[in-house]
Length: 490
Image (cartoon, rainbow, N blue to C red; front, side, top):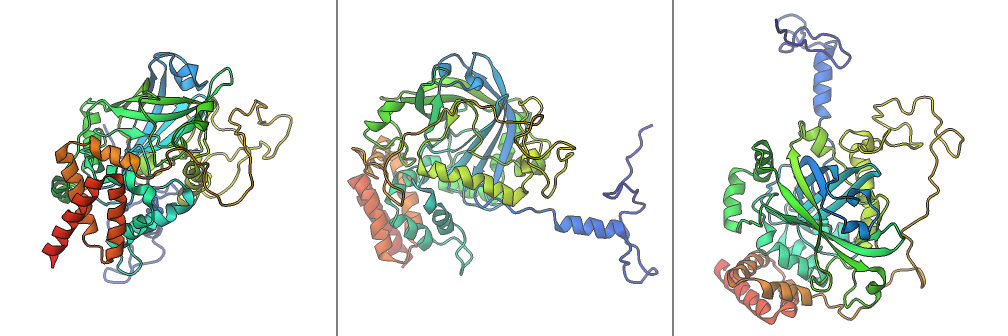
């Protein structure tokens, strides 16, 4: 006969009654000695951990990555790509950028697109976005970008004056804004959007040759999007629409799939490239550096517990494995520190020991001298020594450092090296001209609706000027659309 399991305290003692508090007589006050009550309330008070400052609202799923062939192995010694058909377990997380936990997943926003590869060489975290570019090229401006989009200190709501006041003085954001206020700013689901590594990374092959590489996940479900009007309707009714769509698809066996492509640039060509290849506000020419398919990402398993496996997932672009390394991209360099530090604050120094974060593919797991700290929930290294070097403990491999960069010049704040096309607007204009007329109209309408409430005319003029520099027609049409909206609001 099946027996219902007995409820216990955290210490394992059986709880005799979980519906009535201990009191001093039937009508008397509650007693402090009721340990099960006190423990239950105290634990409830502490259920929420600090949310992510950015990408707080998101969904995740497990799956696998399957290498397509030998193309990638010519450029990198990463074992993830070493042979056709090789499968590596993965965990992916998708998210909005600026909203807090519980905010609508149908906001106009770039989407986070992060994939963790549990390889036998350690975790490789490719932490990217649904757009191929970003707003900034230097990480020192990232806190300001987010502050301009978060609730204002006085009004406690996002303010158009703050958002556009920042962008008026950030012309390099024009390319990304053209993406975000265009059709891809509100994907119909996480399954119906592409993903990009955004940054340039370094690949090293078994022969020691170096290459620069960009990563592109192309959805096999097809690109689909919502207009602002449709998103407002669906988001008002089902703010967690994308979460439900992802889980429903997996439960139905309609597993979301993406093909991973790479663009590869020989190391020496970075010096002669007409754009700065390490600038995350720009894309590489597909004609000069065509997309090469190297694998498939398939998500086929929804997490059993959202908090344990999605909320506590701690991605870090500094999680790199042999064969892949960072580039001089200034925004990436900042992220190499900021992400790990954010997780240490949010989850604690031992967050890498959580099941979703531990290196599952490494035989014996992580081996280092890290000990102690809050929430150390394993044996804390047992009797093993917590220092090095030593004769019988883990020690460095002594292998060659593959990702060296040749440097010159003096230290201090300075501009990146000049390239032939340093313009912040050329690629935004090309993106606009590549759009169909109905897509151009939606882009202009979305931008005008966001800019019209701005109270400072010089901010509007500066922002319109950025778009006019990208394409004169875009600037003129945007100016007319804003004028019509402002006139209608008076």
